[in-house]
Image (tube, rainbow, N blue to C red; front, side, top):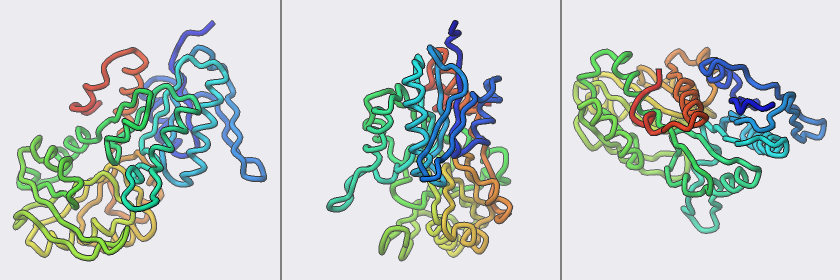
Amino acid sequence: MSSNSIRILAGNSHPALAKLIAKRLGTDLANVTVSKYSNQETAVTIGESVRDEDVFIIQSGCGEINDHLMELLIMINACKTASARRITAVLPCFPYARQDKKDKSRAPISAKLVANMLSVAGADHVITMDLHASQIQGFFDCPVDNLYGEPSVLRYIRENIPDWKNAIIVSPDAGGAKRATSIADHLDLDFALIHKERKKANEVSRMVLVGDVKDKVAILVDDMADTCGTLGLAAKTLMENGAAAVYAIVIHGVLSGKALKVINESVLTRVVVTNTIPHAEKKKLCPKLDTIDVSAVLAEAIRRTHNGESVSYLFQHAAI
């Protein structure tokens, strides 16, 4: 007989985070085997009953992103056909989130396509973290909980950045101004903005600083760091304008391409990322990397969702 208990399933994208979440919830990961046939088709076997259970499938958008997305869709569908009561897709980093608008002719809105695929596969609910654009929630017909890394970032700044009261929060682009001003308001600090001009995607031509950073600790805040070209140039611009030190805090550390080389050679004191994307191997190659653990936030969101409690508490408070 079903107990309608929490069942946590994990794909291959971020098993370490899934284990941390399961541990915080005092449960074990469900027995799932995700493998590939010789022709590269994804095969999923769920090794225990999920009938009438509350299923949460953890899969982040990183690494072999297309394979991991397909794994997630197949796992959702497998649970749906196995009569799960409710299926929640937990996506710490939402795949294709940057393709959220038609910014040029004939450009696809791939984030909407991913939302449709998740719904068609059978997801009843989605939990994610710091969407690149919060409007992506509107692409879904099912409920979406977009959690924020901001409370965890605030705690990190207060506990780990010396002389943070003499700091200034800096947004490396105009798009992140709202995020940076929110953090600055909570810490009662000043705010600065860097205006960047791009020649083409992933390449920044020049940067202009708006604000005074002289003799202050500059804290760059962004939602995603991919090749880290922006962070490296922003840090250089801040130091040239008299900043005492430069830290960077990013929610999703994609860190692809030459990112680690850029960080190591930059004037950045430390680059702090959350563990929505695995980076344990990268930390060995880059001593400047530090981690904020968000497993507590995701675990608490899962617990509250299962128990029918409000999740909005987590928007303002860091889970312990």
